Length: 429
Image (cartoon, rainbow, N blue to C red; front, side):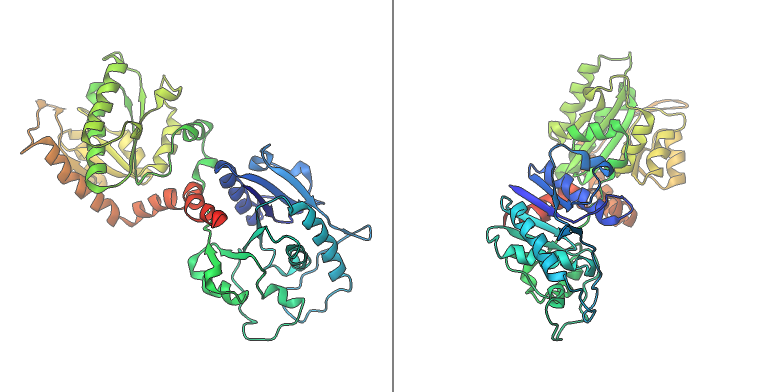
C-alpha cells in the first residue's frame, strides 16, 4: 500500500511537536511494510532532514507553493469573518492541481492539521479541490489540537466553512477517544467517521545503540511482564529459578512474559549446557523458547554494558533475584530505582535486609548465609509454591499505580501497539 503523508512542513525543527508525531507515523508505516510518500512545501529545506527523515525508503514530494510565479504566503484564518485575501481561491486551485498529480498513485493520504489550522486554509481548500478528482484515494484527517466547536449550529459561509465541514471519503482522527464527540461536531460528521490514533512513546529511540540493536532483533516493548536479570553465568545466581518462576507467571496469569538474561561469562560451568538447562526449566514451567533471551547470543559475549543494563531496567517491570548468596545487592537497588517490582530470596541475609528497606516481595530458595547452607523444602511441590506466589506477585504489580503506569507507557502506547491496533486497521477498513 502507498500511504501519502500531507504535512506541508516548510521546516523540520524537532521543537515543533507535530514534526515528532509525523516522524513516529513514518516510522510505524515503514516498520509495517507500507510505502511512504511525504508531501511537504516546496520551500522545505532538504538540509534539515535528520533521524527517520533520512530513511531512503521515504519518497519525498514537494508541493507547489507558487502562484503566478510568486511565493504563496500563508495567512491565518483561525475564525470566521476574517477578510480573505483576493488570491486565496486561485492559489488553492494552483496547489490543488499539483496535489491531483502528486496523489494520483497513492491509496491513502494522511493529512496533519490541514483541515484544522487557520493558517492551512489555502491547503484545506486545495485538498478539497483535489479530492473531487481523486475518487479512489482515501483521506485521513488528523487533528492535533482541541476541536473547535464554537461554530456548531451557526451558518458559516464558504470558504470559512472548510474548517467546519466534512470532506467526502475522509475519516477524521484524533489522539484521544475523549475528543471524538467534539471532533465530530467541528466537522459536522457522524461520530462513526471518527477514529482514535494515539500519540506514541518510542522509549527505545533515545536509548543506546546497543539497546536499539537488541530491540531490532528482540521485542523489548510488547510483553506484559518484562524481566531483566544481569548476573555472572554461574549456578549460584540461579538463572533457572528466574525462568521457572517466569514460566509459572505466564501460565497461571495469562500474561505475556519475556526474560532478558544479561549474563557475563564464568569459568564455573559450561555456558552452553547451563543455558540449555535454563531454557528447559523455563519451558517446562510455561515459557516458550523465544520468551528467553541471552544477550550473549546477540554479540555481547563478554557481558552487556552496565549503562545498557540500566536502560533495560527502565523498560522492565519485574526483577527476580533467587541468588544463592549476596554480600549487598547493588543490582537490586538499580532495578528498584528504575521502577521494577522486586522479588528477593529471603534466605539470603543481605537480600532480606535490603528487601525490608525497600519493601520488596520475599520468596525462599536455597541459600548460603553466615552459618552455612540452608535448603528449602516445598509442600506439596515447588510448582505449587510458584503458583501461589505468581498470583500474589501479579496482584501486587497490578495494584501498584506506578508499575501499572510504567508498563502501560511501554507497551500500550508503543508505536507497534498503536500501529497494529489503530493505524493499520484504519488504512485497510
